[in-house]
Length: 152
Image (cartoon, rainbow, N blue to C red; front, side, top):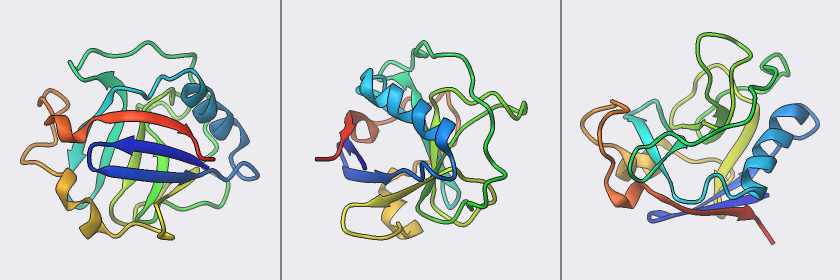
């Protein structure tokens, strides 16, 4: 498990390495390298998802590795409280950015949960929302990631 520590509390991420081995290896490599430390959730869409992992607190895009192969046909679903790698319209374009579903969606490769819960409800993410979902909006500091480390 991985603990993502934010100004709004911890998010514990449970990886499904059996169904999404390449995605999990990719995510763990970014965690190991400290890539997610100091990132912000730059895109928040109320009732849909929160996205982070690609920009620092000044909204400067972080460098990434090469994209990974899409593992979406693995039987996992994008239910509320799950996490998946963000990508462009190209299926094999995911690098470091990820999103956490706040409602049921369609694709997922990694499962997430808040500490002590099996899944997050949309209501638990209400504090993460603001009026615009634009990546150009400057997020409040409370939406910043402090650290992302393997759980002990």
